[in-house]
Length: 460
Ligand code: ASP
Image 1 (cartoon, protein in one colour):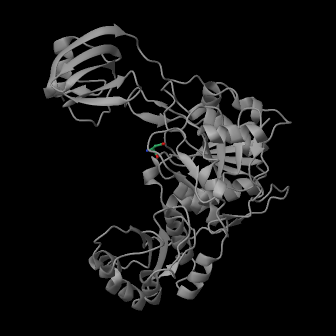
Image 2 (cartoon, rainbow, N blue to C red):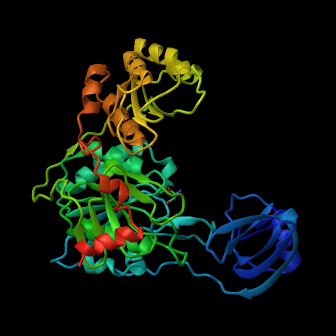
Image 3 (spheres, rainbow, N blue to C red):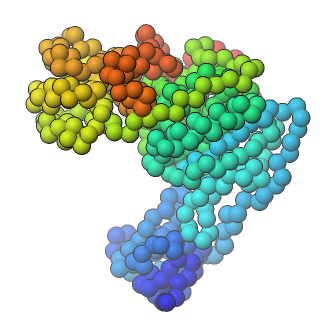
């Protein structure tokens, strides 16, 4: 077998040898596409031989094709030690017992020397080594359930997670934290809101937008906030805990069925939609913003409803959509479809025939709105009335992703479409609300100066 050095082989290894640069060296690279400066990272054993990878000063990694390189120069060298020192987590009798489930994602992850990839570090010792403040808050037990990026979370993982949460609650835990990738955290939050009902303790989902090897990482602070919320708050529901404003001033606790990732890279990416967040949190205190939540209880009872029908789809309507899109779902045996329609809940006339067919063939079909804020109103225009006549059921102000998850959960319990409709329209955890407060849309969204001023008036 040909030589492999820290993941580099073939053309990429020849390049490193030619310019005498080393992995972990600080290198300047001239290419046909511009100049780059950064740390030369090791590569995964499975990567190709045609690229090198630099960690830029911004913290981002960039892959550079070998055949674009004109010159390389090593101007510094400092071997990185990303191993987090293990320290024994101190246990104290008067602190709450918290369980942290790891599912993967960027949170509490570190750069793995062997593969050059970011991998999760989840033992209590590693977490304590990285974030010692956690020991001031609680006694922490950890368990890695999965190690996936959140695009790979799905019904099987939701069910396993819900069952694991049930067991912990019965075993007398005071609060639960779930480390999760941010990309689909709101889908998992919604799934847990339906699968784990009447929890007596807080269940706090947390992630990070920037991994812990980057200076601007939000991993540690989010973890501190989430652990504090699980240990001390009286919100016995599934919530998402992430940065509020773009700065690290405070975190927000968002209700599971009203939260959504709204920015691809900001740390303050999560927003409550259609309502206001439940609370603000910083290292010192938790400041409630709403009292619309289930309160902590001393009993250990919880109802786990681990059901999910996987043959369901979420269709994002676009102009000129054709009926074959819906028809192909029916042909493939899909049992339920949620549409995110335009405006008040509309699709074009071209799609009507396929909706009629879905209705005739017993496919459950529901409407939500792409605007995210506001309600489906299908009585206002002909389009809405026509669609309802063809069997589409409007879902009030349920968010499209939440409706998708709830439909999977409902169809997992029954194939009787009247019962499914009853489940869909009966709110379980604020997925449908009577009204959306105007201050939810205009304020309480973090980081806006007017909001900061307003918050100062209640947060003296
Ligand atoms: N792609 C990652 C995930 O969702 C991003 C993150 O962890 O925040 O798992």
